Image 1: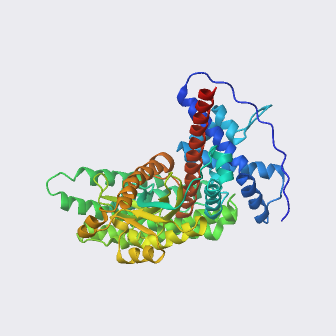
Image 2 (image 1 turned 90 degrees about the vertical axis):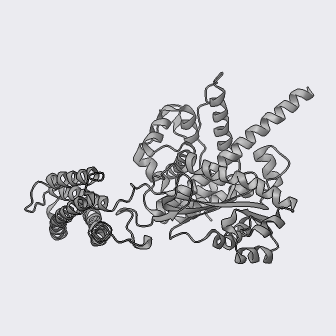
Image 3 (image 1 turned 45 degrees about the vertical axis):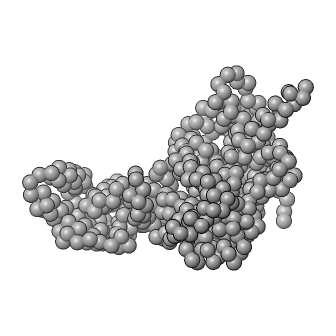
Length: 490
C-alpha cells in the first residue's frame, strides 16, 4: 500500500470562555471527539483508504483536506440535526465548529456552502462509515485504547446486547390518494416550464393555468367533506381531476418526445437533458397506477392492499408500518433495527428497504454481525416482538443467555424468577430512550435525506456521531473524576 503523506495544518487556539456552563460542556465534548478521531488514527486511515481505492482521485493534501472536511461536516450534521443550509451558517458563525471542521486558519475562515455540505455527506459509502464505527467501538474494548481514549483502566464490554426496532418516517406528506394527482401535475407542469424556458415550445395553454385549476379542485375536495351529500360531490370533483390529469399527461408526453428528439437545439447538455426526461418518466410511469388507486378508493369505494399502494411519487421504498403506538397507530417510512451494548454504544443497525419482517427474524443476522466484529455476546435482550421458537433456538444453539421478554404469560412468570433476566430487562428499558434520542436528536423527524441509499448513508453518519458524542462525554466525565481525586489527594 502506498503511504500518503499529509502535513498537519496549524489551527488557531479557541478563545477562553468564562461562565456559560452548558457551552463549556458542549465544547469540551467536541474537543474530546476531535482528540478521539486523531489519537485512534481512524480518521487518517479512513481518508487514506478512500484515496487509495478511488481510481480517479489524485492523492494530495488538497484532496485529503476535502475528505477530512467531508467526514467532520457529516458528523456535525448528526450531532446538531441541522439541515445543510443551517449547518453551513453555523460553521461560518461558530468558532468551535470552525475548529472541529478545520475551516479556520491564521489568515481567515473558509466554510463551505450548503451544496458542498450535501456533497460531503455522500462522499463515503455506508460500508465505509460502518467500518469506521466498528473500528471506533473496538478501540475502546482494548485496555490500551480505553486508557488512552477514556482515561480509564476498565474496557467497555460488548457481551450484553439490547435490541429494538422503530420506524424512520419518510419525508413525505400524508399519502392522500387524490393529492398524488396534484403532485403529478405540479411536477409535470414545472418540468414543462423548464423545457419551454430552454427554447423548446409546443402548442399549449398557459402551464400555470393547469396548476391553478388542480389546486382549486384540491381545495374544493377538502371543503366538501362536511357538507350534505359529500360522497357524491367528492366523486364529481375527482372525475374533474381525472379529466384535467389526462390533459396534462398528454401535454407532458408531447414535451417528452420533443425534448428527446430535439435536445441539441437547447443550451442544455445531454446529461442535463436526461435528468429532465427521467424526472418526467418517473411520474408518467406511475400515473396510471396512481389514478387507478384513487379511483378504486373514491369512486369504487374499495380498499387497496398496502403492498399495492403508491405512498409517494418520489419515494418508492417507503411502506405502511402499523406500529400500534398511542401517538402513531400507523407510520409511513422504513423499519430501523438498532442494537446497543450496556454503555449505550450502538453496535448494529439496519435500515430495512422492504416491508419489515417480524422482529424475531432479525435476531439471527444481528448476532452474526455482532459476533463478526465484537465476538460472541453472552446475552441478548429484546421486547416481546423478538420472541419466537426460532429465536430461542438460535440463542440456545450459540449458548447466549436469552433475555428476550417471552410472549407466553406462564413462560414470563418463570423467567421473572431469574434475577439475571430481571436485571437485563430492566436495563433494556433504556434502549427505548436510546431509540427516541437517536431518532429525534440525530436523525430528525422526518429524516430529510431523499432516496433509500442516501437515507442509509445518513443513518450511518448519525450512528458514528452518536457513538463519538457518547465516548466524548464519557472521556470528559472521567477527566472530571480524576481531577477531583487529584484535588482530594493534594
